[in-house]
Image (cartoon, rainbow, N blue to C red; front, side, top):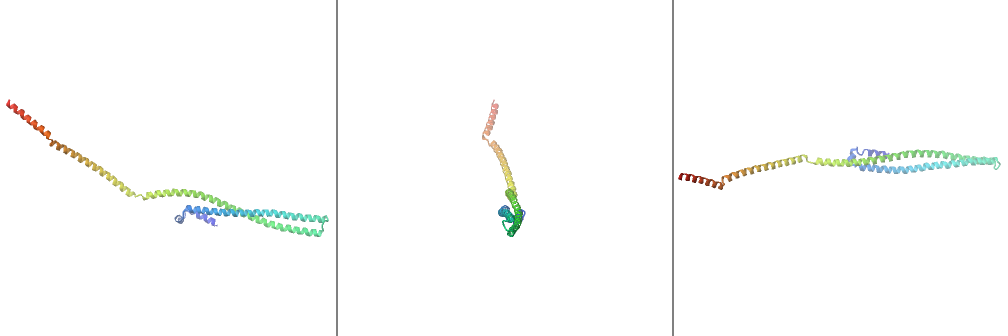
Length: 237
C-alpha cells in the first residue's frame, strides 16, 4: 500500500543520507503527517459508507424476513379457508403454492443479503483496524515531530556554537596574546631603564652642583683668609 510506503519513507528521514542532503526532515515529516491525515479522511469516509451498507443490509434482512413470514401466514390462511369451505381446495392449493414460492424466493434473498451483510461487517472491521492504525501512526509521528523539532533546535544551536569555535583563529589569538605580553614586558623594561637614567642624571647633577657651588667655595676662601689673619696676628704679637 502507498500508505506503508510513505510510512517507511518517513521512518528513513533521518537515516537516509540523500534525504539529509536534499530534504528537510521536519518538512518531510510534516508532509507525511498531512498525507496520513488525508488517508485518514478518505478511510473514514469509506468506513462510513461501508457501515451504511451494512446497516442497509441488516434492515433489508429484517424487511425480507417480515415479507417471508407474511407469505407464510397468507398460505396458512388460504388453506384454513379451504378447510372451512370458503374457497375451493384446488384454488387454495394453487394460491398457497404461489405464496410459498414467494416465501422461498424471499428466503433466498435473505441468505444472499446475509452474505453481503457478513462481507460488509468484515470489511468494516478491517477498515476500522486501518483507521485505528492511521490514527495511532499520526499520533506517533506528531509526537516524533515535536521531539525532532526540539532536537533540531538543539543541534542548530550546537552547530552554530561549534562553528563559531571552529572559526576562531586559535593560533592567531595565541600569537596576539604573546605580542601583547612582549609589549607589556618591553614597556616595563623601558620604564625601568628610564628610571635608571633618571637616577644617574640626578646623581650627576648633585655632584656637579657640589663641585660648582660658588657659595661653598666663597665660604672656604673666607675661612682660609680668616686663618691667615689669625696667624698674622700671632706673629705680630
